[in-house]
Amino acid sequence: MAGDEVSVLRLCSVCHSPLGKLTFKKENMMLAAPKAPVWCDACKANRREIREVEGRKQAILQEHRTYPHSSLDIDLEDVAILPTAN
Ligand SMILES: [Zn+2]
Image (cartoon, rainbow, N blue to C red):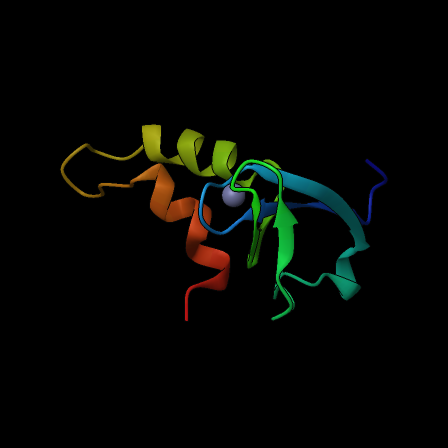
């Protein structure tokens, strides 16, 4: 990945299957997914997409390991849907 570019994964909002990947310059990063549904092969249906910065989940997991277990309880499924939480 180039230094000032960010890879963003497009995921199905229902089953979290990967729908593709986008690359943005950091300053142009678009984490807000469009309202228009996209076709999900896994669901065989049109679904809202969600977007997630590539590697973010791993970064959170690594950070999580440094915390005392009682202070934070992260559910990875929750982490995956955070970017589009309304
Ligand atoms: Zn799906």
